[in-house]
Length: 266
Image (cartoon, rainbow, N blue to C red):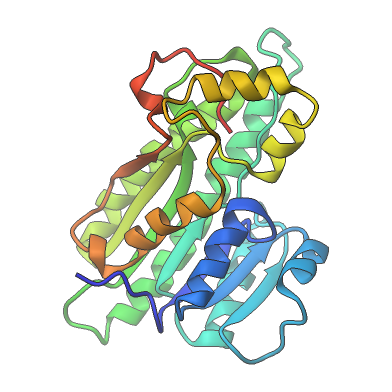
């Protein structure tokens, strides 16, 4: 059983900060070729430095809610590395929902950002993986990992849109796993609890009470760092998980063991 991803090519979205950045850096450190995608070109350059047309890490800036941008991302990856073996859909957005406001559009926005972007990119990358597989008679062809949240199963009115989008992403993971299994492409997800991403850091910076509330609803008593999700994602990307597909792996410090109604999840 190998946890190695050396020599593989991965696309990682949401790679300009937080969890996506931690995954991209880890993959590159482990010898994978990594295309780091994000809307924030300035932040990509700040984090990744002066990336040139050589080496095992590149970046692509664009709005992945646009179908043409998705197609261009896949093309840029093929141009740089000739193939794509791993996709990590780490791009996501968190926003508050005003549940009783008829003009609130957070559900539409997060379904587009957190669900549809991942679905469309999964479809495009899967097409490329299937094309690559024509010269490969047996063995795994590719691995797709979605980043979800325990908010899919926890109820909090202020995070209704985020919860709905997370639940939809879990179901998309299972459905695409069945659709792509005959093509030897695996689709799994990592569902996490509170992680000290940039969005959560900003939210709790001036709200000690909220920070303590999150910790009190996490049996391990702390908020995870982005790096603590990295090895779970690598496991799903590597041959170590070659017989896993359609699974939503929970990494939440034991939070799912508590009652369904709990503090906000990010």
